[in-house]
Every structure is written in structure tokens, then in C-alpha cells.
Amino acid sequence: MLLSLVLTFALLAFQRKVIRATGSTAGVHDLRTRVSGNQWFVQLHLELPGEMPLHAAHELCVQASQVIRQHYPRADVMVHADPV
Ligand SMILES: [Zn+2]
Image (cartoon, rainbow, N blue to C red; front, side, top):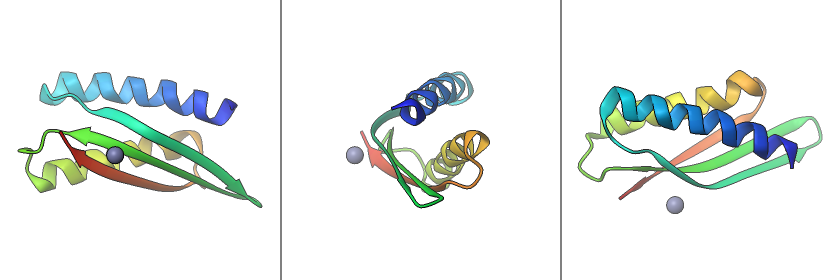
């Protein structure tokens, strides 16, 4: 669906930014979108190195959700970090 495609491209750009900034990969899987009435819900899993400090991992999760909200400001976004 179009929503997922737009977000996939936005997240690819985000991943490139993370690699440039931190040297670490930030894989994304289980991107899910759902619309209920006029409320949008977006979920994704962000793969981060298990040894990354929690504050750094949290910051990247916040940034990933901001990427989503740049495109869909009213989306309810949930980013789940997976250690890899
Ligand atoms: Zn996962």
C-alpha cells in the first residue's frame, strides 16, 4: 500500500543517515501500518547493535518515529528496538 511505500523510502534514507553518523547498521523489519477512522498507526522494529548504550538506542528510536511523523504528523508511532 502507498503508505508503506512512502515510509519504506523515508526509512531507507534514515538508515543511510544512521550508518554515516554512527557507523552502525539500523535494519528495519515488521513495518506495519493501520488506519482506524482518522487515526494512523505505524509500528516498526529497529535492529540495533546489542552493545549500543540504551540512551543511544533510544535516541535512534525517537529519530525513527520523527521520520514517520515528518510524513504523517498525526500518526501514532511505535518503534521497538531489537538487539542484533
Ligand atoms: Zn523484531
